Amino acid sequence: MIQNKSDYKRYIKIEKDFYFDSYPIFTKELKTILKFIKLYRKVEYYHNCRKDPLGKIYFFILNHHFEKKSIQYSIFLPLNTIEEGLCIIHLGPIYINQNTKIGKYLKIHPMTTISKNIGTTPTSPKIGNHVWIGPGSRIIGNVTIGDNTVIGANSTVTKSFSNNLTIAGSPAKIIKQKGYSDYFKKNE
Image 1 (cartoon, one colour):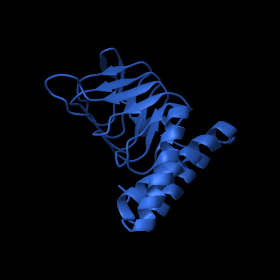
Image 2: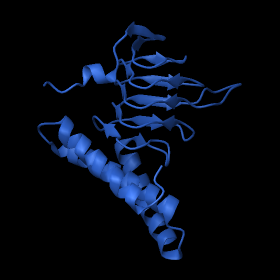
Image 3: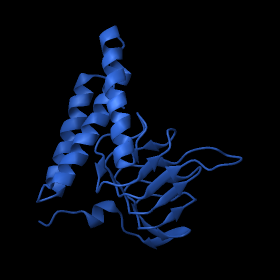
C-alpha cells in the first residue's frame, strides 16, 4: 500500500520496468494500460497521503477521472488491494472485490473476477506474490492462493492452494508442481 511519495514513485517505476522487461514490442494498448495503472497508483497516493484541502480536491478530480476510465475499460480495481508490480495483460473486463488482498507482481488477464462469496461467509480472496491469472478465471470466496502460482484460463477457484503450483479447471485443481517463476524465467 502506498504510504508516501517515495512509495508512489517506486510503484510507478517498478510497474513501468515490469512492462518494458516483459514486452519486446510496446504497443498502443500496452501504453494505454500502463497509463491506466499509473492513474490508479496516483489516486491511491492522493487517497492515502494527501489529507490537506488541495490534496482532497485533487483526489476528487483524479478519482472521478479514474472511475470514468474504469467504466470505459471495464476494469474495476479498488484502491489499496494490489501491491506493487501490477501487470494487466490486455484491456478488457476485470473485476476485483474491494476486500481482496493481492501481493506483489500480479499478472492478470481480462474476463477475470475476484470476488467474495455471496451468502454465509462473505469474505474475499487473499492472493500471494508472483501470481499469474489466466483469462476468464474466477476466484471466489474465502480462499488463499499461495505465492508463485499460475491459474489457468477459465478456471474457477473456490478452495485454497499453496505455493509453487499450476492450477486449472472448474473447479480448479493442481495440474503441475510448477510455479510462476518456472514459466517466466529469462533465458540465460
